Length: 146
Image (cartoon, rainbow, N blue to C red; front, side, top):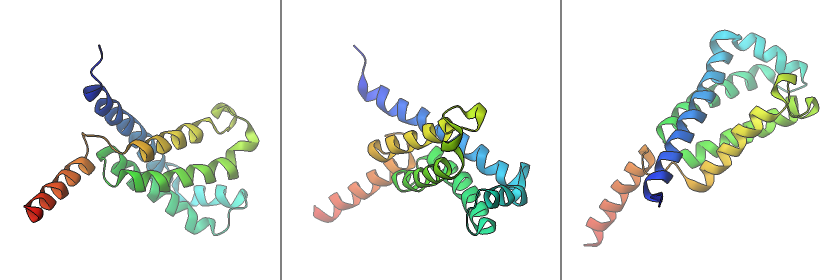
């Protein structure tokens, strides 16, 4: 029989690492590869208001949020913010192109968004900074109530 007490934290860890790396790569791209000027221009071409402000904000959410998700820090909150960003990306840039990412479609932002929803529901798991912080809070509560 499969021991879920090991599988669940391992699955959450692997999910966080994979999603975190994908987000970090996309945030890094916005700052260092495509660059904020290119991303801002693309956002402006989509009719996104204040594209010069939105581009670095999205890049920071992807880059910093990706690091936080990878480490499992404030995972549910960060995942909620990233899910909203992915929804915005899907609606503003990808839905009209269909599903396939090779055609500019929504499959990648949809998959990332689905991953974020799963992390919102499940949390970061036992092998995360969130779990360490929760254990510390629990220990402190037990000491106060003793």
